Length: 278
Ligand code: PAF
Image (tube, rainbow, N blue to C red):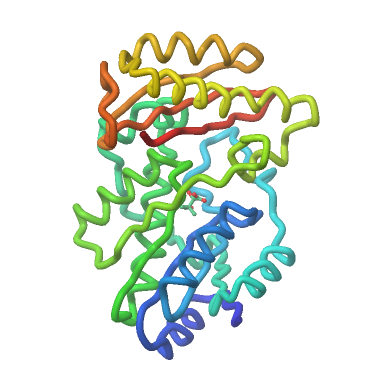
């Protein structure tokens, strides 16, 4: 594995690639969820690039940019063991100039749910993903795939739309949520949870399990499902429970094969999200 810190080094390293390239963008503090994306990228491509960059433009004022977990040494070891070819770790100065053009997330997908709670977050996220995709595509690999987790469902929907709207030559590969044995969806933010909060956090995945049971009993009415889910979400501060279609439009009835059930809640001071694709 080569670790590169500058854009020149990255472009030089990717210029030697032959065949397909799989790319996994991350903000570091890698866990089993990231590893599953890397493993899939490794399986499906000739070369694999991982980026670690805690992108300042997707953090809002007062959010935890400085407190965001940074574990560069451990992350590099994980990447090496997982067979990554290039680890790209740029600085903010390298990725941004002053007074840049911005990308604005569209209203429907960008300003509901996570967008309401974190206005501007998706603009910054799209901006960095566009930059990273363009950098990896620069040397024109024969095929280019980028891997994103379904856990950040709204992020995934927006990236898919950006790639389509801006004709970016990359295949976006959605990857399944990875969970701990007890059901908690893996997230770098889980590191912030105390033992007691971690137990309370399990109600998110439990509420999604309850929704699955209801759908299996042919209960398709979304308001009934939401009410039942909220009964499970008693020990957390619920921000939203919602059912949308794959285009992120709210729905009244579950459409099998085209529904995502999303939940966001605060456990102590930690904000967690989880979802289920049915
Ligand atoms: O999901 C993340 O970790 C980030 O939003 C991403 C896609 C790496 C962009 O900074």
